Length: 571
Image (cartoon, rainbow, N blue to C red; front, side):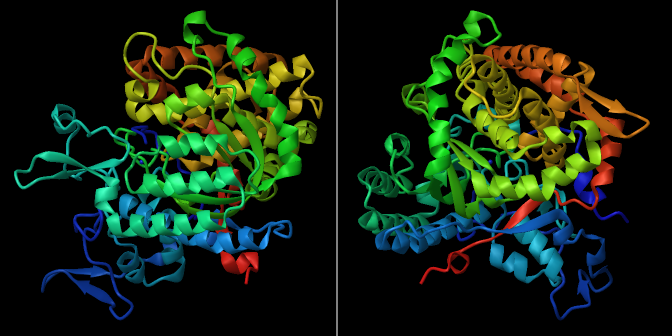
């Protein structure tokens, strides 16, 4: 069996995208049947029926799917207090990791301990459960059921109709789980009530870190975030995080993204990043944030879809990552961050775009460049460059601040109106408006390094990389739709004789404009049915692309990290 086919198969159903604490409810994602222990050869189900030991040889090897990369950077410029702070932040991140396990699966330790194969156990650990996050959450570890679309945020036997008819006022709150009371009625429970022990410990550690903080803005953020974890009121700490400008260390922590909730996209999952700012690269990026209002006004769409004004306090910075935890570490790894997600904070203050330079460089060298050498026409491979990859990723994040957050017809926020499809559409918008921005900035003379073809061809190669993440990733889904649109409009062409893809720059520019219009219209109208139809009709992988991806068997799909205090060589 071709081991990579398990990873490269892309699901054609796109019901998309983020909790029950294991100590309170044992009804987490449980195996259909008990799995073999290290001592057992067969599992006794009844006196007459036996389940054989799983054949672990059918699973892909970790090294074939994930390229290993060590997270570290130069820490020599940090003060003694800053170096003392890093292990504390990593300890907090580990608590977020534990909480995400509860949200995504349940009891981590028992689950992993019962897998008696080292490679299978490592795959399960990377995926935070028995499901393959790079393959549409298909069952990866034998004897387990399909993953619940709502993870552990909702009762597994809850229907959508039951949820929609519930009168609980907090059912759509980002920071609640849904449980059943003694009368079997759905009731919401806030995260800080669900995980009091872990959150109290994390809050205490945040206060310890705040005592070591030398930057006043960072100290204020850490203090407010410590309070927020215990109340699930994050706006004040989000505003404080937006106000930080000069801190050398950054720390993102808490329930943030909603991708894990593939039932409604309402519930935020715990995660953390420990970051070190790269000041020299950050200085290169600072000038672009002030251009957002002008770029918003010039979007290629009717005026009614661009009346919102992006905040002007947005900033762009480059970082090296020292630690990923929780949702950010599950499956495919994030290489850029655009936060906060609170629309009211974005409208008031804009957002911060963090480019994760060391992780980005790892994906470019270990994955994207080998893919380009396999699939891109030889005469266009010269356009595959790291500055273009960095720029495309950066402007993808910047473009989250463009467009529309509230529908124009009274359907509420775009996130609420598009429900489980909102994340994929937002990622698609950022993809296409990021390229639109690159074009505009080249024409304005604000971008002078390289040429627009670098960004076009590197973008195409980036789609080959990202589409392999599968349908459980909002980025993977967005890229499947994008690829098919560009191919149908002649921006990407495939040579049957050579097996290579190439970019037509004129048709690419036109497709960027029309696709921008399509996505912004769907979002602004809150057109749930239109989005669903588009994904069903155009979200399928084409035979030509499937054949091309099959040639990438020897190239890892993503990266996995060696990380922690030991890798940082801290005392």
